[in-house]
Image (cartoon, rainbow, N blue to C red; front, side, top):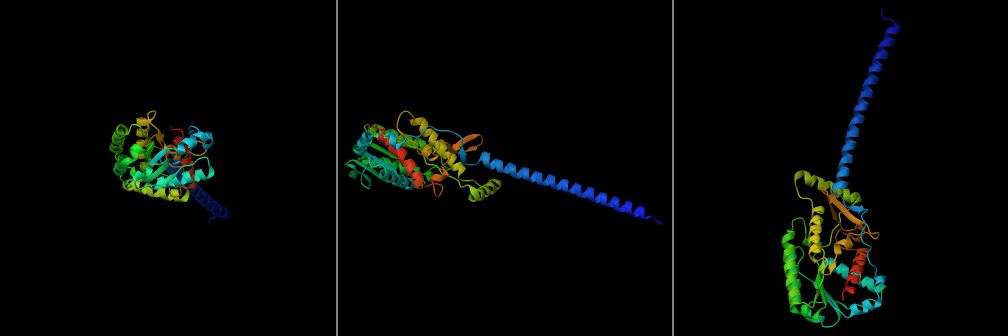
Length: 314
């Protein structure tokens, strides 16, 4: 007959085995959790480092202030004939100019939306829609038509801007830029007294926070199944187009660098993201209500810099 001490020893041994087994399982689960955590962290870092827009510590040149422009410059500008062709973001900028004028009575521009080039016979800041969205060639041609129907001979300054929807991931930017460059060269030759201003393509912003993570999740799934991811690739093409424009006209003709203004925070840092080792810029989130159009804050910031550029062109 087995003694009581034997049974106690057996129970102790079984308890020890269970404890060892439990500890082993706990360690195994911890390793699994750690691996999963590491995987999650790696995914997060991939999003944040490779394809995430955000505020980064890259300083830019200090933006000039309306207050830096003397009253005499505003008086000269008020006597100019200016034409601006655009679509929806352009209307945001026009609203921003009106906002700035309310706060700065020394700026007195006669802002008029026109349909007929003959309306630009007096000092005026004329503006109108040009072309169709998603068709950059139509905007190039429409601007040239306005010039040739009278504005080219009557105005002092003229420019138009593309919309962000005109340049996307699918855009052949070499083709579009060459069409733009050739047409502008033709207009330069035909209207040598005109100051033509060249505008960079506006940028967009992809949301952050909960909405941003939802979008990233959808983008991640699209990448897995091989579908194109929109947004970052669109902004990459816009950045590339804008670099072509700066390289072509920098130091030779005035540039309304809309994309740089849109991507610069008030403290001088930039809204940017990296992709495959390259840095690209995006719209500052605080400047938009829908990821593309300018809100009140954004339109005022952009309008101020446009007005300063125009006031310094003489």
